[in-house]
Image 1: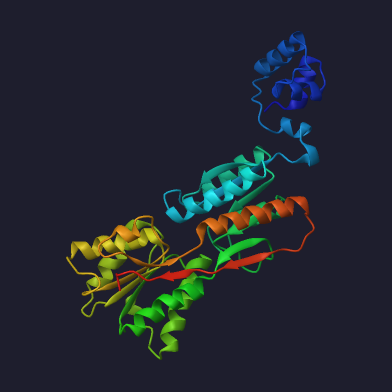
Image 2: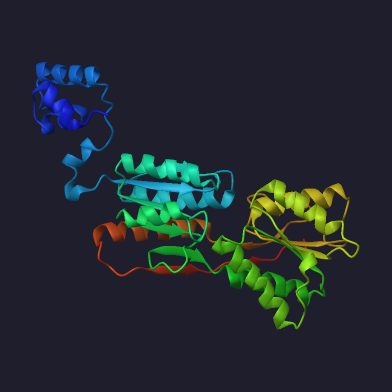
Length: 331
């Protein structure tokens, strides 16, 4: 692949002149501009923003990368808005990528972002030992993890107190009289899912109730798995009287299963979901949720990354924001 140096050599001009042409500077005469464009065409050179770095103060590109695992998930959409608002206010642009919880896609998009020489990257790791993200950090690119964390890694990160949020939800169900509480979890190699499961266990232990394995199911954060896991739980000889579902999309799947069986909420079964939904209040009945401060998570992550760019040697910061149990009518 041709480089700026190759183009400059081919056109017999300086690298700075090639950069000025790419950035449409008026300091280049038409004849020289034509030579540079001809050289780029002959070499198949496609300019990216790397050349623009030559004219940025402090070496910043003013470009951040954001990788999210599911662009359809309202939580990550709201979080992305928080990142973008802070970036825009500080004259940074954001490149948004969707990994679909797939390591190969995550690695592909990290390569793309690095080829664009982004100043830093914000992302939730796919797992607690995500090898792609660990490699990225070792390369020296400034990284802030959000929502999820890496095991035993000191770095800038923004999370929510998932364990506390889950405890409050299950504690509320128990205080309402529920004892058979079904749990639809996500993948346990993801810190958020593991912490929410611990919150469930904490609440059961606080009320001296046993954790029955038959009421625990593991999904993959997608709607289809919420449906499948709810179907299994509701088909038990002694089905749960309440469901606690550990993310919003799986909650949608669980609600689908409940409606298929024509069960009444909350009379036949109570439901609490982790993560709010834009239309949760419009459901019949409105859905009780553990609301995460998604927008604030995105804001805090972008602010941390900008601070890291200004002071690369500053101590790592770990922020943990508080969720809120929003009581509606589904339990």
